[in-house]
Length: 326
Image (cartoon, rainbow, N blue to C red; front, side, top):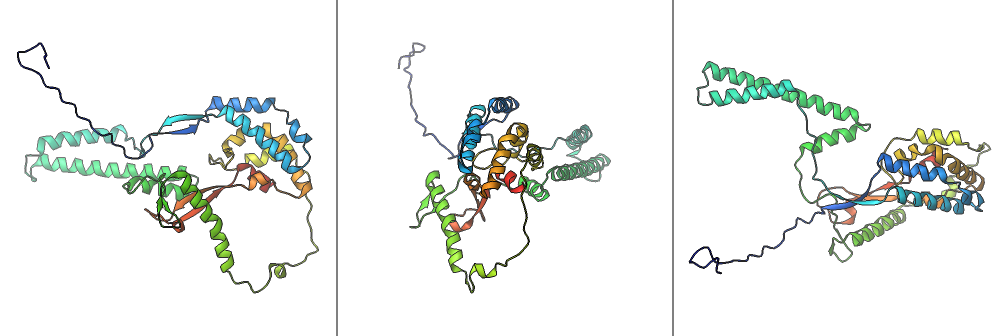
């Protein structure tokens, strides 16, 4: 190449570096439950008359209409958004100014006394400051961890949160699941993994059921009783109280309606839910849509690839808890 800057020729070298990837997703689609989105959701619910529910003939039709309209407003108010996945952040402790000042003094005397003998009075002074600094840090960390545990409603979960923050991360990403199919081939494609685990969880119950020894029929253990109970029609105030008494969690079933979101709109959903609940009492049925659970496979141990090493955690719709408690 003639660079026109010298009487020598220049050389150009092109190096193609292959792109490297750690296999982890950089972004994901999620919903934003911000205050403005929640207000939008409540605005649409406020305009709804629910006439199609009241005009339907039976419980299944009524609930399907209710679920369809609720899902429609939910999709409008909380659309999926692509967000960058942040690296796993550990719980960083912010030390007070007293400990930071002690740290600065410790570092200063370390630089001044690192060349001195251990019996020098300045070196002895540095060691005392170092000991005070370590004890102060340990005590403050212990108080911060205890505060983290006490702030969690589930104390066991809080303890494990503190423990896991101290443990080094090993193995693959927790969101990455690979299982073996019937032929022993390892499957990593997400949809195929879901189908394999779903089939396994359905069939494993049947296998255990068939393995049980039955000496008598189930009807033989049922005793007749003269006692009975009566269900009185529910009212909107009772529905509101039931919703308000739910645990304030963000977990949700297949309908993606969490207890936190349901509480914020309880006064707008009390009327249709009351009608559905009373219809359930009259017909003696439970809506089929509330029987569908979201199943999450949890590995019993690390690096597990067989279906038997996963246990299913089922999350039912939040609305089903309202029907159960009524």
